[in-house]
Every structure is written in C-alpha cells, then in structure tokens.
Length: 493
Ligand SMILES: Cc1cc2nc3c(=O)[nH]c(=O)nc-3n(C[C@H](O)[C@H](O)[C@H](O)COP(=O)(O)OP(=O)(O)OC[C@H]3O[C@@H](n4cnc5c(N)ncnc54)[C@H](O)[C@@H]3O)c2cc1C
Image (cartoon, rainbow, N blue to C red; front, side, top):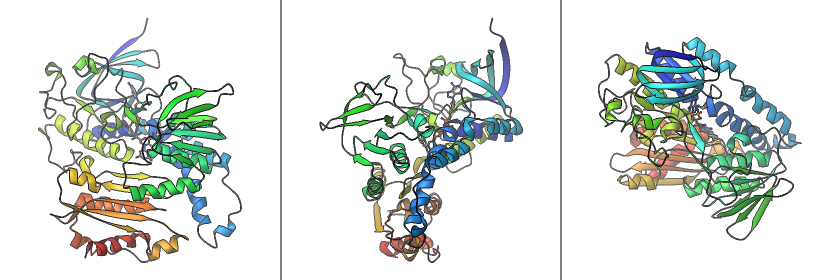
C-alpha cells in the first residue's frame, strides 16, 4: 500500500524551473513557508534543455566568426570549430544534467523540495505522486502557484506523430552532431539551432511556413537570414510541409508543399510551445473544459488566476483578496522568456507574501513591486544568432494597433564603433516613438554583438525617458552604441 503523508505549507509551488525557484525564494524571504514540487530536474527547461545549452552551442561559433572578421585576428584562425570541445562545454553548462547544485540552493534558501508530479485536487489542495513512492496530500494556507512551464507544440503534419523526431530538448542535449538536419520552424529556437548545428559541421535545411523571425521588423530579420545562408543553411521560407516519413536507414524525408522534398539524418521540430497545463487537475477548481482541453489561464498583474469556481476561493474577477491560485512564467502563457518569467516570479512571490500579511489588498498599482507591468509592453528579447537580433517593447505596427500616434526611425548601424568592431559590419537599428509624449515605445537592433545594446533601450522604454533628455545620454566613442546618437539625430534632435 502506498504510504500517505499529509503536510501543510503557506505556499505550494508546482514546478522548480527558474520561475518556480524565484517565486519560492521571494515568499520565503517574505517570511512564509514554501514547498516546491518538481517532476524532473530542479532548474527546469532553461538550465538543461533551453537557454543554457543552446547558448553554449552558439557562443563558440560566434566567437570564432568574430575573430575571423577582424583583420589581424582572422589570419590566426586556421581551423574550424572543435565540435567535441563545444559539446563538452555545453555539458559543463548543463551540469551534465545533474541538479545537485540547484537542490543545494533550495536547501540553503529554506525551500522544501518534493520530487514527483503534482496536481490540484481542489481548492488549496495538491496531491503529489512522490518519486519516493509516497503519496503527499498537501494543503496551502495562502497560495498554490503553477510554474509548470511549457511543452512543444507539434504541427498537424501528416506522418509526424510518433516518428522519433527531435524537439528542442533532443537538439540541445545531442551527444554528437548529425551529418544532416531538417529544422521545421522559422522562429527563435529554429533559427538559433539551425545556425548552431550548421556551424558545428551539419548540413542544415530550415523550412518555415512563413518568413524567418516573422515577428521582428523585416530589415532586422533579413540580416539574420543572410547570416544563416552565409553559414550554408538552406533556408526555405513561405513553404508548407505536406508530409514527413522515415526511410529504411532511419533518415527523415520532409515533403514540401512546393513539390520538393528534403531528406536528412535528423528532423528537429521547433514550431512553438504552449503552457504545460495538462494533467494538473485544473478541472477540480473549475478551470478544465468538457472536451478535456485546458483553456489558457487568465491572470491579473500579480499572476492571480481568474475564473476559478466561486466555491474555490475567489470572486472570479482575478483581483480578489480571497484568491489563492497563481500561474507564472511559461505556464501563464503570456511571455515565454526566462528573464521575464523570473521578473514575474519576483512580483508574484512578493504579492503573495504581502497579501498574507494584509499589506496588499486588491490589485496593485502598475509599476509597484507586486505588478508585472513590464510584461504588458516592455519585454526585452534577444535572438542569439550571429548576427544577433535584439528587441524591446512595441513594434511600430503593434504600437499603431494599440492606438498610439507613432513615428519610427531606422538606420543601418554604421558608426566608428561598428567599423572598428569588425570588417564589413552590417547592422540595423530602429526606434519607435510615441509622438504625443515623445518617449520610446520600442527599439530593435540587429547586427554582431547588439544584444548588449538592448538594456539601454529597455531602460528608456520602462523609464519613459523623454527623447530630449535621452539626447543627453551620450554614447561612448568609439562604440556600437553610437548608433543611439545617429538615431536621435535622424529623428530630428
Ligand atoms: C531551445 C530554447 C531556447 C531558449 N532560450 C532562451 C533564452 O536564451 N533566453 C530566455 O530568456 N528564454 C529562453 N527560452 C525560454 C525559456 O526556456 C523559458 O521561458 C523558461 O524555461 C520558462 O521557465 P519556467 O520556470 O516557467 O518553466 P520551465 O523551465 O519549463 O520549468 C517548469 C518545471 O516544472 C516542472 N513540472 C511541470 N509540470 C509539473 C508537475 N505537474 N509537477 C511537478 N513538476 C512539474 C517541469 O519538470 C519543469 O522543471 C528558450 C526556450 C527554448 C525551448
């Protein structure tokens, strides 16, 4: 018979990815007790199968190419990437898929860990099928927080199901570099992994239904496209996939809508992700649906979930002081980025602790420490290809849709700093301006090493720094940041 243990905590966090860890940390710092439940590795997707390994696979290629494009250094580059050394370094950054370091951090922080799969069984109640064989029945005095991350979304392509293709997990944890790879998907993960594998000696074909990085300004995405093609990636854009099959030798054949077909040793499907909410018992608090599919959660600016049963503890408007169920990070389905998830986690953790102490009633003010206000329109994101693409805030189109009177300025990046950076530096930058308030709504940079330019733009967008004050933020000479000055001059300052 399964042993059964009943426990009570102030806060129960389901999922120990970066987001769950941060929620638990903040509530403990706020004086509450917390348990975190993890079905796989403490640290989650980012540490083991996403940000860290993908960037560890990309960085050596960027460093090598960086040296090759600086005369004087380029001559010293006489070899190609050492794939086994790159994989070894990737293994180091994933701690060889061991989570001891993160478990120790939980212990040091005073967060209790239960390994196993958790699910809601009713208001404030969570059951965990423990990996130790114990069935834990947990009760939360103040909050249950869903930090269960996201899962890959498979496209409805004939023949794909059950074919043994790679998701980003298998790609980022590959033990060797395949001879050839077809990547389905022209989003961030598809573009990054296509380049990483191409630079490691793999023949890569990337197939995208639409454009490459279609969510970014075309001039910026085109620079990344040129970078991928320069690395030998065969990029097929605006091309549907009709069917996928596996041949006798285990190779994959992808039949394209244009009549062509591509065969490769491996197939990577990187066509997006959705919140991982299946099997979480949401129906026990009124959030399931009759067809068995879990609809996206609606959350307020503290991460509090709206629409749960009246009897389950909220007034249903998501702003109730009686609320107890929160969703944060990828699970909340709004912004799927580690840094933004951790930001949201800090706000949620602090809001839970403040509500428990009666210090926060109702919804917090925008930009207070309890509100995830930046998620609305000030999210920074970087595509870590070479060249990089870095963007924050609204695009010009989004700003117009949101009702702003918008203007934008665009320029190729061509300043003393960029010409010193490397031979034939090619970059592009854009500022999106709110014409009524004369503040930045968004910014995009594309080019080698532009990721480090982004935080200045994030500060300007979040701080709503007036352009005539931004004029006094003088970029150092000679840096790539001088493009800021050129952009403001182009705007008319
Ligand atoms: C290839 C790739 C590259 C990426 N690169 C970047 C990047 O460079 N920068 C960036 O900001 N973002 C990046 N992301 C996005 C980033 O990985 C996610 O936004 C981030 O991991 C979300 O953190 P999370 O804690 O919400 O979820 P996760 O990291 O997915 O953690 C969720 C955890 O919950 C656990 N869990 C789920 N259900 C249960 C359950 N019922 N019971 C117990 N445990 C459960 C899971 O095992 C997991 O450990 C990348 C994503 C991918 C796929």
